[in-house]
Image 1 (tube, rainbow, N blue to C red):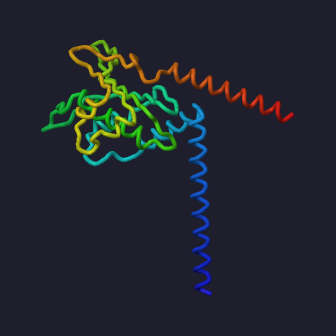
Image 2: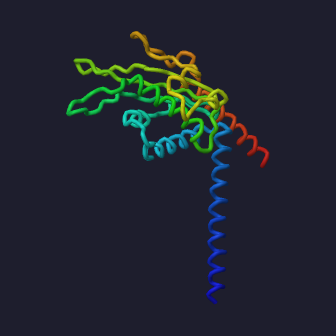
Image 3: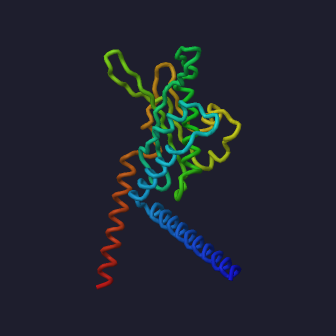
Amino acid sequence: MGLGHAIFACLAIFLIVGVMVFQARSAARAWRKSIAGGDRGALMQLLDATFEDWRRARPARGMPPADWRALHTASPVAANHRHIRVSLLAEPDVQVVEGQRVEVQSAQEVARRAAVRMVERLLYEAPYVSFQAVQVDVLTEFRDQDGTVTTRCLLTTRTGRDVASYADWDHGTAEEILGEWATREAEGGRWPDPDIDALITVEDAAAEAEAHEALRSGRHTDGTKDGR
């Protein structure tokens, strides 16, 4: 009797796990099919959930707090199933040293590392979608004496999956990796404009979503007529 119960319990567990795996795979196929078909709503829902999961995750060991804070500000600018553009907000790495607040690294240095890490996440850690190219814009804010806040772009970088696959993610510095991509940085009071030669714009994504919706509506209409 004991052996029979044990065998039954094992079979039940095997069946439950099998059903869970099947459901997970079915859900994954549904996500991929919707996104690949141009469903912008599904893509944005996926991105919102993914970015929220990244924010809740623990920082990697040894990652400077300023880098982690920059990654927490990540927000999609525009995206389709092939391309994605994301913006971040970077600040200097300020730490308390011997009771004094000291800027140990500039916002530019933080921006470089955060940009590289964001590209890596988008290309290799986003579920159910395989972006072929990404653009990351890292901004910073300045507060004037009158309280006015001004936002400037520290750097913008874009790369394709084929180029990024050769990056030395484990040992290369952020500067070295960014040098292999199409990167523009602030220099001498000149700020790069991330909208120039942008990989994808808000207008591009909206137009593509409208085209997809029109196509889907047309198919639905045709199918309804056929069924009559």
